[in-house]
Image (cartoon, rainbow, N blue to C red; front, side):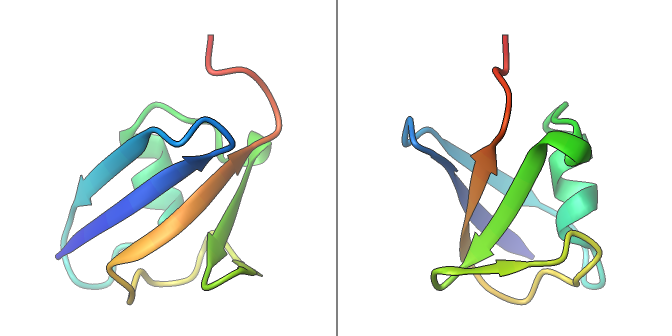
Length: 67
């Protein structure tokens, strides 16, 4: 399973390669991102981080710096 996640607002693209049943939280953690500081968007709507990844694209809004 492959999912492209675009960081908002900087536009960097992260590609998650996972297994069926993986959640957005799993993807965030694999990129070293704190799930408590991120919102996941799919087709313009916020989705829960514990939702299974079913789309090939999405967005991540970071509430704090990745620094």
